[in-house]
Length: 607
Image 1 (cartoon, rainbow, N blue to C red):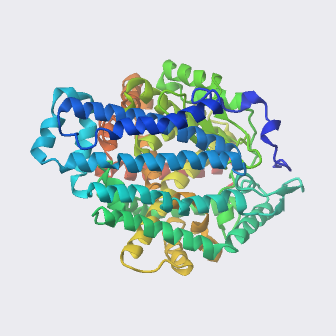
Image 2 (cartoon, one colour):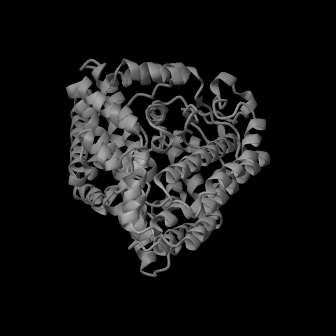
Image 3 (cartoon, rainbow, N blue to C red):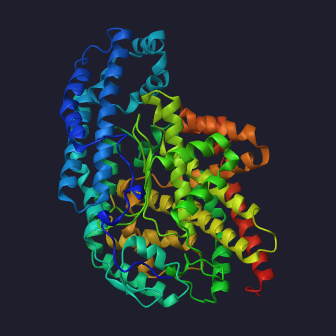
């Protein structure tokens, strides 16, 4: 495979292949006008300070005014963030983003009185207000606030904590600036012998090369740059962990993990059950890497060997229109209305497709209430990016349905729920592709199975490894142990022994933590693992039961954040508190590997 030798600028991209942000702000001038008006909206909400317990009607008005201010702030910050992501090196966009974030943090500090003032009411008065018919539309919100009583500090302390986030964000922002803008990964050769400027997006493409020398050179060039900054990155990573520990202790939680999970009413036993289920199935993981070693003919499987597709034919490339058609067909089990609604979003230019100079790497979907959900891509035409499109489309449709079914304060959903919506699309796409193939299409069938196994490994196994690592680093910090580069490598290397059996675990492999942005948002990644486990269970029900299960799943999407995520999932038919979805997903992993082995034997490229 070859990659483009030069990155285009944004001006080189056809406008129809960029996102349309006019549903957020038709122009920067209107963004500026909203930014100027935001302080008055905040002041209107703050005017309720000291009077929240006066009556149910007064409390409702306060909630309404806070939501009005929050909605404007959300839109301002989201728009500034997206425009900044178009070119991280654009100083004007950086300044606008900083202004929006500074304003948002200031508003958060001013509004920090709300929860502690409400919880300073005695429990009986609070319950009387919360149960009043005037506040029926905020019942779940108030129930959630009530749960936070043990971990809410005084108004003065809450204001101080809110203001401190402006300082604390310097750690993840510094890592992001280093990772996305400052690091220079050098120049490497592609499969055609061309010199290419290595980016993190191109790195992922080069790791799919059938030429091991290409993969090894890309890996070496990337990791050499990280290694040269390892002390700085270790210092940033350790500071991020200490920050998590500080904020959890400031609020009285037992641990940073409890602080991260408590607000969404997710019991820590779910986290533990996930780690236990994956660790107990290490033989399945070892079988996965063993199959990869056998097919690649390697006795020393390295980290740069675990992403190359195992199918013996080069992977096809897909145009944007082909990718859209594949995704729409893949999710058709969710019903014609879902397909039509997703097509409508594509038609309205909600995707920013191409990698350009300075653009943020990776992919995401984001939204603000009352605006269209949008998706950022860095399109390379691979089937991997077709799956990424299906994934981000799942997020977008979740937002679209929730925003259309719920009021503002219930439309936003948790990451725990979000990762289910995105991964259901990926699983359904996989099964649709397999169903469309004749049984004797061995190479094509193996390629899809290989991708599915890679997805389960990357999303369930790898992200659980990350979650395990995060738990261990935070426990060390909570015990007062320093997190040096050597300590971080020791912890990560120990996790790699369990979650990557059969893969070379050298110094480069043990320092992989240094390039993972998610570690600056602690106890986030486990939700990818719970998401794919739950998504497999939901997709099986949709496949086997049809419309009834599909509608129950879509009801979960429409529910947004109107209930706790575990409760919403249970209503859709899956219960993660039992640990069963995690064990069942690992069983599907094993079944997929067994089918890969059988197909590979029939195809003659495995003896």
